[in-house]
Length: 147
Image (cartoon, rainbow, N blue to C red; front, side, top):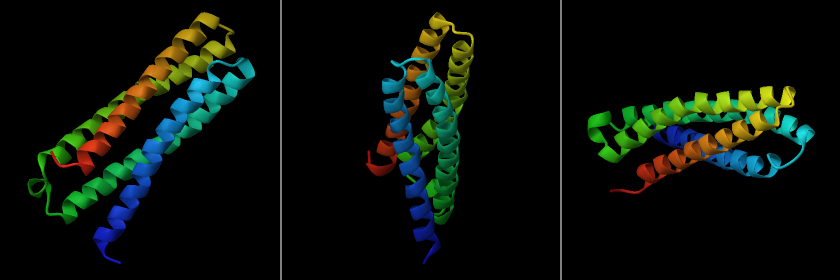
């Protein structure tokens, strides 16, 4: 199996997890954040685990993307849309810590039984999770469809 085929397969698996996992997190949030405290606490733990998985998948996707760039002859050999997609990917990594902070604050508000804090943190988490997912879909669009 050639280096190109291996890189593409790893890249596709990582991207599938990265995009699909983000969408799953959003759908889980939509359902779980309307429920009572025990469900919310379980949700926070699930999202912490999902966050680690999404970060790992994103890093593998980025690393295999760089590997593909090297295989294809470097950045000069690639269209501008690929450069843009990599820039948006870096932006996603910049948004991620804010999403994690919102999730952490949700957990803290739950432990204090702070209803207002839970509402504010869950809203912020949902917004940031949607921003991340929309950016991931934008990266997908940039990478697969020529401009």
